[in-house]
Image (tube, rainbow, N blue to C red; front, side, top):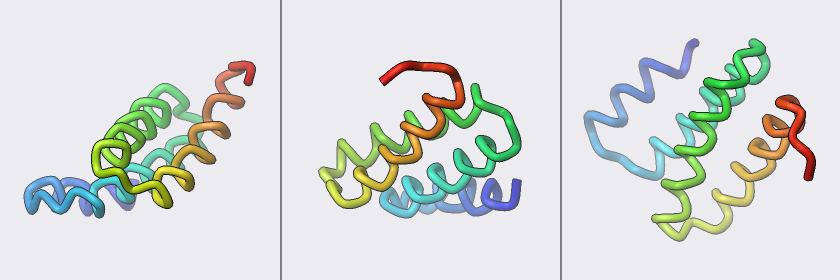
Length: 77
């Protein structure tokens, strides 16, 4: 996945808000590739990070993706 090298670099640099977006991007890629377990794990990590940072706007965007992944996994709202 194209965003994984960026995610690794951002983790090294400890740029938390950017890590959250890179996790989100990787989760979207995994979702579209059909790897729902990996997409779910990545989006959950992104949610936890944005909650900890109290970044409500970013969290809202990530929660939309979480809903898409959850629906694809067959979860009910």
